[in-house]
Length: 220
Ligand SMILES: [Zn+2]
Image 1 (cartoon, rainbow, N blue to C red):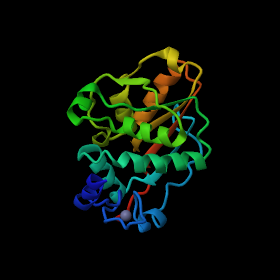
Image 2 (cartoon, rainbow, N blue to C red; image 1 turned 120 degrees about the vertical axis):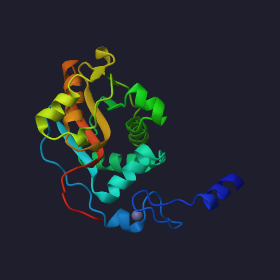
Image 3 (spheres, rainbow, N blue to C red; image 1 turned 90 degrees about the vertical axis):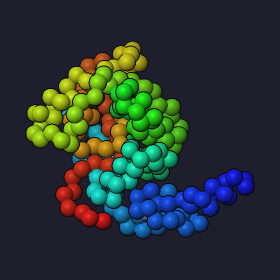
């Protein structure tokens, strides 16, 4: 109790998106970020190998900075906020009809370096909200150059081809899969993971992400 109060004094909770100190009645997000920030519109249709998909926010500057803190600067506690938001979005868009919850993993090398797999933490947080335990299904065999530095859809496709392996085809055969990742930019990576899961016999793959690209200019 004393420790908790001391912790709150030393590390007062801040808004996951804008970083402002939170008021006593606020959790995860400040009032402005929760009410005024536009959510990602419900997408129509799927993507290559992906049945349906959704994201919580646009991948614009404020969300991007939040996700960078989450991925590279140790703000792993953001997972619970992202998880709550994504679970709510999935529920709203009727995407919770799945047999198996899984995520797009980082490589073993990256995991050692970073100490955590951000997409796995997200899957655990979403799973906690939806009352489902996430299952590992994929392995990233090696680290490829980041997709963001590669131009052209064919080049991005080639950059991810064959780098994911299904851990146990028995586990995914005939299953409706909900695949999670933190950021969906070009979707080449997610499509490649979905392709592997479908090849291993999955019935369909639905995708959920914290943020997705789409809106070009936004400085908020
Ligand atoms: Zn905020």
